[in-house]
Length: 393
Image (cartoon, rainbow, N blue to C red):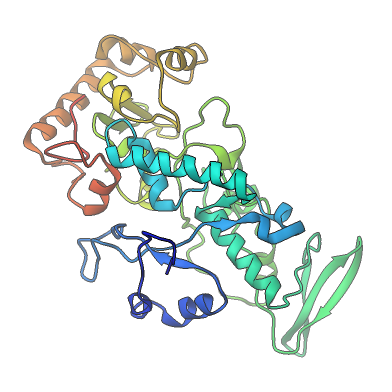
């Protein structure tokens, strides 16, 4: 729990039903975690699903506590002293008084950090900061620039690894065994082509070391594999100025807001735009096997741009014009004009929008049940009624 004045206190028993050993271990190592007040499960309607949610997030971390190790952390998508729950409110700053208060709180933390010489960060970078600090305090020998090139096997048992030290081959023995924690193969196009055909390494925001060689090394020694065609996808929009992968704005919160839908390149809506990001990306890839859907179009109107963030920024008329001039944004005064800009059949696009607007009027998405889950509504606009996520276009 956080001892700061006004902070939400989290009793330890809130963790006990979900993997108590790991969470208790982390807490015991000084890693400060708290439970999100409201973060619905992706499938809250399923048996055992939770509407308040069971998400555990890291408290803010002062990067300056790491000393020289501070430079070893990769930049995160949220380089602000903001807790993850606070960051989720930022796109609604124009419609929510609470979001404006959160932005003021973050601004005050920035000022306080300049005075106290603290560099606070949250989200994944905050968690990694706590983890690295705990590891260093525990005496873990962290070696960088030392890629593992293979496993050492003696008499059928893995007894160490082959690595590199000062540019030369090096052997490290292991008395108790070897734990491989090497991620997936997001940056290995050959493995993508084999297991997830039709996808590209250029799409990935995963860490550069997510290259898959250790998976293949373990397979070479008889390791079993499963779910190689699955991934935790996070849809992005390639806004101008976001060339670095980890800086690309996420699109899930954009399309979950009222007055917006997602369509494939034929102009047909094909998913719940407010659902789980993993399901979102899976649906897009499945659709792309039938109709071109990578990339897809987000269709929205001036109601949207007046109220919500777009691609991580508040869309001024000047920025919208620049994005249009650069080809990132297409627009038209009518649906037909927009269809011409996007090379979509105007009849199809008009029918898609008319059908969606009918669902809005009925307050029920008969095609994809958008808004039926608490998770969908949480991603939307809590000030929009009667639905937080369904709004006319």
